[in-house]
Length: 119
Image 1 (spheres, helix red, strand yellow):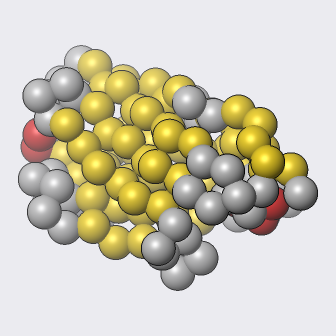
Image 2: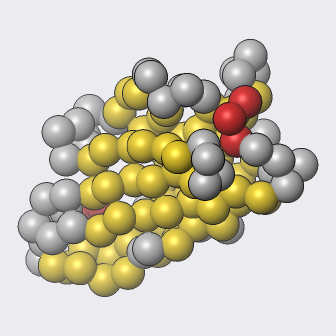
Image 3: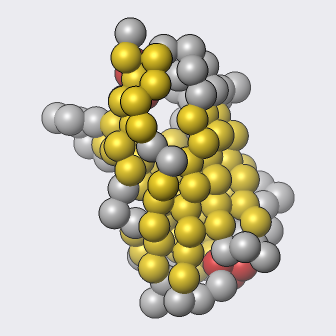
């Protein structure tokens, strides 16, 4: 089992930055691909960014490309999401998730952290 806890959310003005952190426990995440997802009120959950187990591969939703950067520190068992140039439409609950390398779906999820961007 992998337990995930997100932190770093908050209220920020449009154009500002936040850095989300996801702390993992229970197992080392070095064997897991990691992802950040978000869900806004009344909308479905969507993928924001994903990073391979080694950190060598990343991909992003088109809506955040060039503004968000996902990274990981396997030695610290942490994953990060640096969010710059935030927009009101980035407002959502952000979730960290983990999946075993060969798996297609994410099996482990954090409880989420709220990000609110004011205009």
